[in-house]
Amino acid sequence: MLHFPYVVSTDRFGMFPVRTRIKVCCIASEEEATLAVRMGASALGLVSRMPSGPGPIPESRIRDIARTVPPGVATFLLTCETTADPIIAQQRYCGANTLQLVDAVAPEVYATLRHALPGIGIVQVIHVRDENAIDDARQMSPLVDAILLDSGNPSLSIKQLGGTGRAHDWAVSSRIRDAVGVPVYLAGGLNPQNVGKAIAQVQPFGVDVCSGLRTEGRLDPIKLEQFMLAVRDAVTDPS
Image 1 (spheres, rainbow, N blue to C red):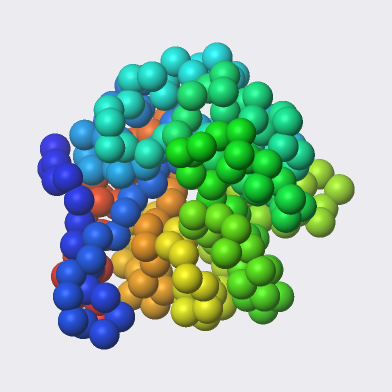
Image 2 (cartoon, helix red, strand yellow; image 1 turned 135 degrees about the vertical axis):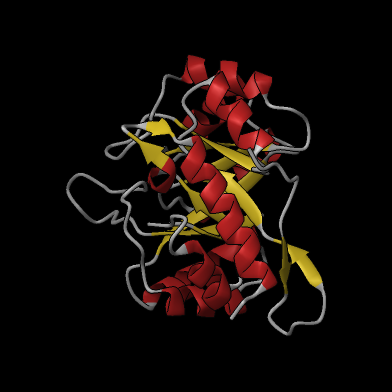
């Protein structure tokens, strides 16, 4: 299988190459983690308890998998908790080096997390349902290390906080990318067939994929390789 450590993109002005990071989410085993890293993923998503959607695994498994990930690869702990103490407890137990907050939290939560967990990255998910997401992203961006744009719906009685397999309006995502001063990951319905178009339109810092690379619930090495190639081809020919 093809292996490359990273893929190269042109920036939106076509002036110089930049890396397009690839985050493979819903990692369920050490074997999946090893496969994703070998194929060029720079980040892995490890999903804790969620109200809905694919990929949750016990926190003990998150801890075990995170321990096997080599230095230089980010481990994202996806948490639906919205208050500081449970989030801090999850991170300390699981040992991931990045928190992905999939639901909205109060502004003071970020400061508490920074104080309690120095050196741990904080990524806030913004669910892009309409143009209101632009203002949400502007407000959150000074408080976090990155923003991840997804296609959930937190307003439902059973919240959708990711893993929907749906794409959202990438025109809104592109405006968010222009509006904030932190890296932007693009998620939501990405797969080998559409990721090139998504990159060309949004030019995100990174792309995030879960269900688009799975067959019968398992990470599919063929789809993974196709995705890596599609990202590479998109950034060498952004048109």
